[in-house]
Amino acid sequence: MTPAKSSNFLSQNPHLSSGFDPQNPPNPDLINTCVHCGFCLSTCPSYRVLGQEMDSPRGRIYLMDAINQGEAPLAPATSQHFDTCLGCLACVSTCPSGVQYDKLISATRHQVERNINRNIPDRIIRSLIFNLFPYPNRLIPLLYPLYFYQKSGLQSLIRRTNLLKKVSPRLAAMESILPQISLSSLHHSFADVIPAQGKKRYRVGVILGCVQRLFFNPVNAATIRVLTGNGCEVVIPKTQGCCGALPEHQGQTKPAQDLARQMIDSFANYDLDYVIINAAGCGHTLKEYGHILADDPNYQDRAKQFVSKVKDIQEFLAMVGLTAPLSPLAEEELKVVYQDACHLLHGQKISVQPRQLLKQIPGIQLKEPVDAALCCGSAGVYNMLQPEVAESLGDQKVNNLLNTGANLIASANPGCSLQIKKHLQQQGKTVSIFHPIELLDYSMRGITLSSLDRT
Picture 1 (cartoon, rainbow, N blue to C red):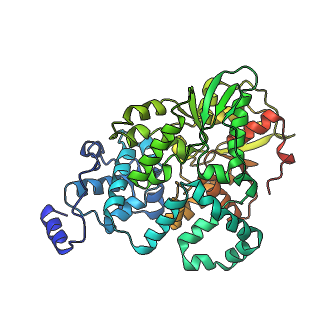
Picture 2 (cartoon, rainbow, N blue to C red; picture 1 turned 120 degrees about the vertical axis):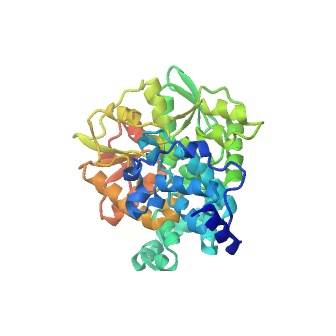
Picture 3 (cartoon, one colour; picture 1 turned 90 degrees about the vertical axis):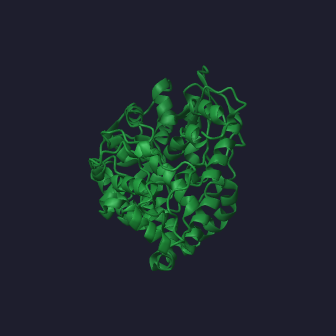
């Protein structure tokens, strides 16, 4: 579309924005690093499912440039192509020109969130997600009726009838990944400071997460045991909240910044060597605090200092080494397939370390899936907002994992685990999923997997 045609189009459609607003639009210099070679297309999950150029990194960069130049409007018709991006960052790993697509899509999503007036159903589902999920204290009261919903048999009835999908595919997608509710995790808390076992090597803070602490509390407990068992004193500030990953990934500037400041403040008064996180998506956002708070003069330096201490739990353990002895998890050789979470693999460049740790457990044979770098379709809340694309990706991921012949799946991100479990159930498969740190914890404690009750 030429500038003249664009101007005429916009004059006839005054409700449309003529372009990005002046607050941190996608940087033209970053846009111009793209040479349009197309290497990103084969690795982009949304392009592989939808097959449309505008739903690829290259197409979205074209679109960003056109909006910057006033040749296309920032409107629902254009912003939908930014919405289809999973933010998996596979294109960043693939790009031979080093295009910083992560910075471009982040800037664009904040523009979309500020300037696009979404329809009512979209606003309702987004409001539900972003006003609940990042705030554990708001989620807790809802878990009691959800517990009854599962235990009463109502969940089985709803799923058999497909009633919810007929009413709202997005609500059905949200319900389909609902984990098993355990009321015991709602009342479980950790001490502020947990001493190291044996000689103290490090003093570390642990981030509990929001969804993680409510639905995956055993992973947090395992993380603490593995750290203390390997010579770390663990500090858990009670004032910590959500890391801000969910609002940041969807372009909600103020909530993301507020949560980042709260997290920094929560750990500010402790003399820590490192700050440890066990969820891939959270870890990527924590390491982006310098960017998220770049315009805040009161937090610029504090954010950089905080980021310098943040380590994924697997990254940290591979760096400092395990000191605790490890035992086999089964009497026979155990075939394990490690599932690469996108924000670990592409966002944090962490891939070798989890595999190194798993291989140290006696009796484990590590299997590698085909297309390991392909997103599973979870991508934060993508599987709730774009359920059709996520459904296709989830099927592909589970097929690739199952084809390895592995006895169990190791997954280091809660969203990935829920997505994979859903698609395993849809295929009638009963392969167990563990966080790699859970496997290390069992191995350290001499617990065999056959003795566990995973119901």
